[in-house]
Length: 191
Image (tube, rainbow, N blue to C red; front, side, top):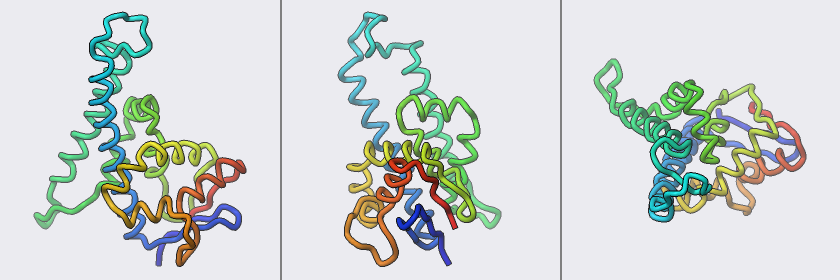
């Protein structure tokens, strides 16, 4: 049993556990990317005092407000992962926690503001009998472009599943699947 994705002749398949692991690595890599971006932006733009400058990031700017929302998502994810289940054990529910946290629309807007809205699109789908739109695919491809170096650092197997152009045992890489969807304006079917 597993999850399969189809866009015409382009397919991707993995086990349910593999799909959850892949999305957890993408979540972690996205947060690594955004923390790195915040640090670089601070180094480059913190000294700008002209409010008309497009890189002005001082307190009260949209950048700063949405940055606080991203930090809040990260904090909520960390605290949720430390909650024990009813048997007193910690279990990794990262995907469900992320979905629950991002039901708050300002958090979705924060993801979109920083061009990582593809994370929301990737995670907020059923594992079976669902769809990704061509628009979802555009956002996901953009996310994959931004986080590519962080995926490679976090997990080589996940990197291969997303980006490898070598023939896989079952289907294509995820990037190829989402790229076909966005370029041909076709939806992806989840089965």
